[in-house]
Amino acid sequence: MWLINGSQEQLGTGFFKDNILVINFNYKGDDELIYKGVVIYKCITKDLLDGFWSEKYGNPLYLGVERCYRVGTQKRELVN
Image (cartoon, rainbow, N blue to C red; front, top):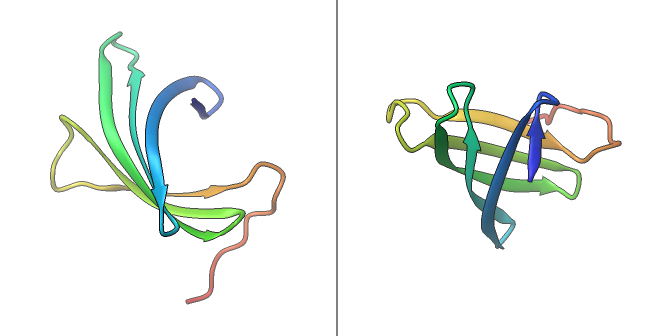
């Protein structure tokens, strides 16, 4: 379970292999409907995940992107 913006609770299950974390998630929207999707993270360091996600009925041409930081660590951008 994780919390988005301090208010939206999301649940999920997944697996981890070769520094890749895959999670099938679901959450209840403001309209009380259940939404489902998948998020895939690459573990950059022990404190940083770089990921992308898509929802089941979302626009198939759109992938959301996000970066996850371990709680209590500083956000630092990677230099490519």
